[in-house]
Length: 82
Image (cartoon, rainbow, N blue to C red; front, side):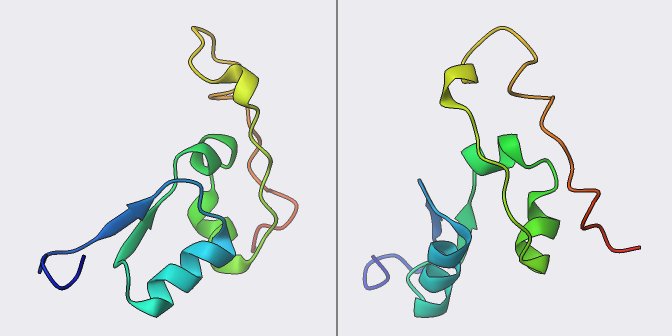
């Protein structure tokens, strides 16, 4: 892709923290987008930065008309820096 496209490349789709880091380090992409993990981890940037565990997402709650599964996932207060 880089040989024909000179702009920034954002990779998305099924990345875990380690695979996201690997694709950035390889230079294949300039940024990684997270969708599912952002839903289940409202504090995802901090969790990634600090190497904290991720809360698993529940696919059964995707595309529903309810707040369950979208706004009820917990922040990781236990591991928060003070």
